[in-house]
Amino acid sequence: MTGGQLTTLIGLVLVAVGLGLLRWRLPAWYWLGFGWLVMLTRIVVTFRSVMEACGLTEQPSRWRIWVAAARNRQPSRMVPEVRRVRITRSGLVLRLKMQPGQEVQDFDAATERLRHSWRAHGVHVKALKPGFLEVRLIGYDVLRTVVMPRKIPTELLRVPVALRADGSLHVRDFRTSAHELVIGATESGKSVYLRGLFKGLAPQRVALVGIDCKWGVELGPFARRLSALACTPDEASELLDALVEDMTSRYELIRSAQHLDPASPLESITSDIWGLPEDIRPVPLVLFVDEVAELFLTSSKADEKRRDHMVTQLIRLAQLGRAAGLYLEVCGQRFGSELGTGATALRAQLSGRVAHRVNDEASAKMALADISIRAVAAATSIAATRPGTAVVGLLTGGWARIRSPFTSLDDAVAACVEHEALTPDIPALAAFRPHRPAVHVEAFELAADAF
Image (cartoon, rainbow, N blue to C red; front, side, top):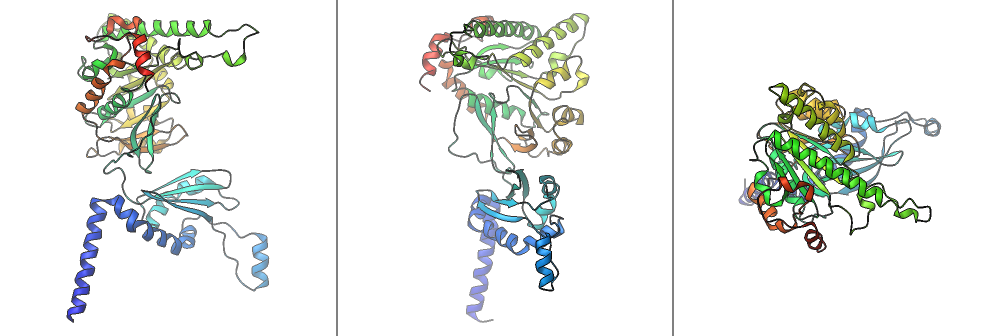
């Protein structure tokens, strides 16, 4: 081997090692520089053979059969048409036109075969308009190291909390999905998910209320941004009564402002707080319930009576709270029908579902069985080495894997302290306000106008 050949060989080895290190340490940069081209080439070369191997072809049309017969050839089967290819930060997005007789479920059932055939990290299928679908191929594991976008749009009651396995942003939208159930075992990342919510809601025009059955150690650090906090079952029962009373007063306000006079304009009629004038609109309120199973546990007849009352009040808030601007975030390590009367009724009102790693399959089924059996299997297979990973039910139907970015307790508390002046003083909850200087609702309204 000559000196020039040896130099070339060493150079090629160094390039290969450099690309390998780049792929491991900075997979996004590797993908944008080289990975997309390799995958796109593989798709172009093998598209027809992969479609045939995955059973995603259809019999040729009569016209194609006649043309092939005229040429004395065997007509080939029809494959989906690639109409557009888009390169993203995490993968490729193919827009396909399906052939007559095909449906989206055919492609969804073949996602694992497509993933292995094209050596993608993941394949996600989504229906578009009739006859068209989107196939999103993920080039690398975007959940290994969660990197949130630098520019995140902020809206009232919309909090970006995690990254999905397909590279898109997962947003907790309280206006669209009023109530949510979050379950997860110890060290599964449930607390980090809650910290992200507190950090995102702290600067917004929202009242935050907490029921912490760990004697306040979980939600207590956020007390300076809380309008009310209950740390024991007895306090929780009284706080729920006060919230139901506040909800009733909000409905009375809506009813008094409906202007059912025939001469009133139709646009002035409303059935929720969002149609009220801003000067009289109550502030929206988010209730966090941590370790909800503790509210169901009893040790005596007196406890059973209190438990039934609390669960009834909680279900009332879940059933009627949305229009009054009351939203629930119910969290716990486990949640199953064995908790007692009212568990399934409460679960039915919590349309949002987030399941971190759990210790029992019953909890995963309670959260996700009515969404998809595959989602239950995905939730029970989350590795303990990946805290923050969860399975969520999507507002558009179906489910997805997500992972929350790490939010330290210091960061979440700092956000609450920074925006302490925005904490409203709600008269109905004054008895449960944590010990701190209070800001009256009018002052809160003035401060919120700056946002």
